[in-house]
Image 1 (cartoon, rainbow, N blue to C red):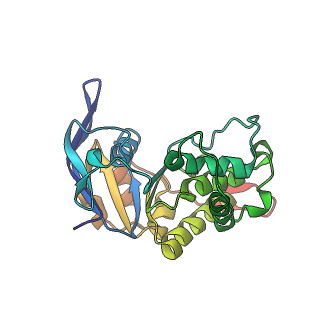
Image 2 (cartoon, rainbow, N blue to C red):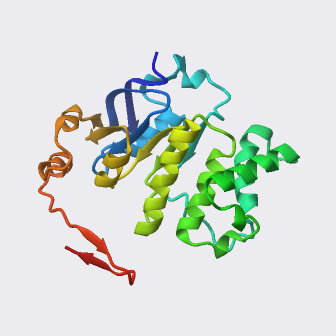
Length: 257
């Protein structure tokens, strides 16, 4: 039995078909990348898999149980698109933001225990942000803020972490650090990771498996194509793609080669 199974899922927005008979399986402990053009259904598929959207037909099973019948979903953590576009003027410290990840299980008006705060600090240590625990989030860089939100996502000790375009708007150094952190969470903590991204070369070097989507369907043919070859991206995005090498110089500038 697979850890997650999506079975014949269809989904439509206002009569427009977004997912078309999608079926897939994900095993516990996998690091899975989901790639595809804009509008291919990647984000919608993730929203269905975490339970934010209910499929028109079909079902999502976790260890054989329909997600719609699971009341306690704290084992699932989800970082949606633009989750890092946080109001920098919000008067909250790093540790307060991370602690918010515990309230879904405890309830909004419950006080955090000493054990809860130990979980907060442990999560901050995992993402290398413990020394910033008292700093206001408005004083963090984009990469640091990203780490704080990942800490908030793992503080409740989830079994699976979904991320939707987490590298958007961050620099190359922060992106590299993100992938290293996700590898650490996957290998050392055993967290299953499902990540939507447009960064094809990076995710194919890090993930165990790639799911390709086009036009609301899983495109199984692209999995057989050599990722290093020019025709992979052209095949997936359905138009000619020119590869550009980004060389990051010591002064912070980017040279296109």
